[in-house]
Image 1 (cartoon, rainbow, N blue to C red):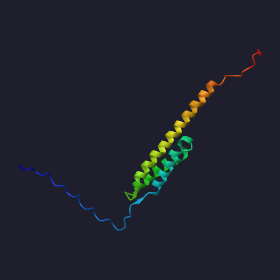
Image 2 (tube, rainbow, N blue to C red):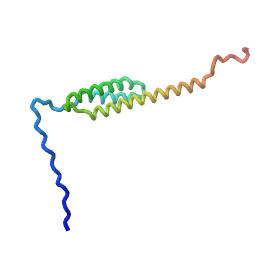
Image 3 (cartoon, rainbow, N blue to C red):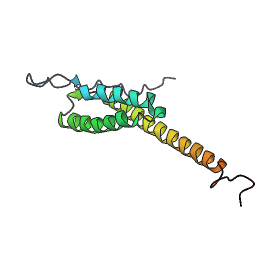
Image 4 (cartoon, rainbow, N blue to C red):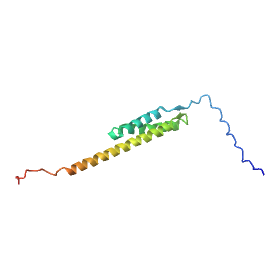
Length: 124
């Protein structure tokens, strides 16, 4: 008894040669900046200082995506952009959490304090 071998894998066709005037693929410098700013936002998010780097990182990421799309694949670094955006959003979430915690602590302290003036017992 013999088994029939499945279809043989076919090698993909060779890529056409690049035109000599085509630029070499290069990592976008904004991708590295987005990652660095996102990391800074995530590290300083609990201290409320992460708002500024996170906002700048998200704006730079949008610009970098536009430039990468316009470059027709000659700008790389999409993974760095994704990581930087995730870190920036993490920083913004940490800022929101720390603001909510501060607000809850403030409301609890305000509720524990006496309301109005506290006069001495002999004052009517």
